[in-house]
Image (spheres, rainbow, N blue to C red):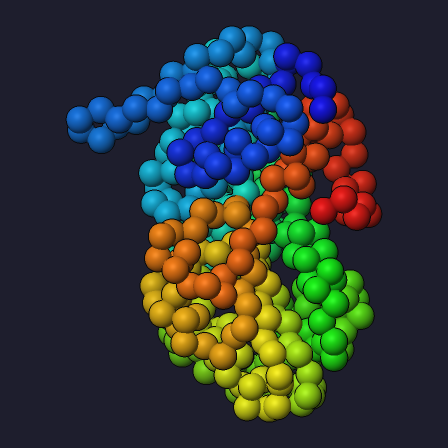
Amino acid sequence: MFLNDNLKIFSGSSNPSLAIEVCKYLGLPIGGSKISTFPDGEKLIRIEDDVRGRDCFVVQSTCRPQDEHLMELLIYLDCLRRASAKRITAVMPYFGYARQDRKDEGRVPITAKLVANLITTAGADRVLAIDLHAHQLQGFFDIPVDHLTGELVLSRYFRDKKIPDLSVVSPDVGNLKTAARYAGHLNGDLAIVHKKRISGSQVQAGELIGSVEGCNVLMCDDIIATAGTICTAAELVKERGAKKVYVGVTHGVFAPPALERLAKAPIDEIVVTNTIPLTEEAKQIKKIKVLSVAVMLGEAIKRIHRDESISALFGQEAY
């Protein structure tokens, strides 16, 4: 795929393999840069390519360690701005702090808005993100946001599996719209688990609305963090007569004790995308499968560079 020299793609240290995949799809070399750390822990980033007047993209997920990767992204954006890049796009396959998007009690911050402000102030002209947890997060930015979804990748994978007797189960009420879309894509039935959250890491599954007896179950969500919701929902549908249980998730955060729970849970396959790279510990769990979002991101970057429609991607079957 031929793209002119005006397009430059750089990678932070959070997910370099994904950035390399994107560049390979676009037929471009990865942008030259050097990321180093001073003895006191401060980051230094030097851009080694000429970016004056060019369209620049920085691929960086703000996953663990979130603060370090976020700071690195901010330095990258400032570096490109001061090097006179024409347009700078922060490509954030995973947007950390997305779940801190409201004040649900007194004297707490809205950190997602703070992070959006920092990215804008640092020099980003636009943001390209995947599954921001809540669509209204786009409004936290005062710059254009192109919002992609892992459904494009996950739906095709599960459609190609041709799972018989499929029932799509929403692991909680808040995820109902997403589950309904997957049910529509895959021609499956729909059921809902009503849960009660006991703490940040503990969830109690209450009741199942709908029937899964004799069905193969697919549960889809945007994030697996501690895996409490998914694992308790899996146990419930198994108790209610489900045969196999599949899980499809965009962001595999896998915060402790997620991996221990998933290893023991009655789940046959856990499918995540590579918005966050798997840890060595996660790679040991054989039922975890990783799908790549590189083609989707590459297409989006190409369209942004050419000032073409992003929404047209959602009607394509190229993924």
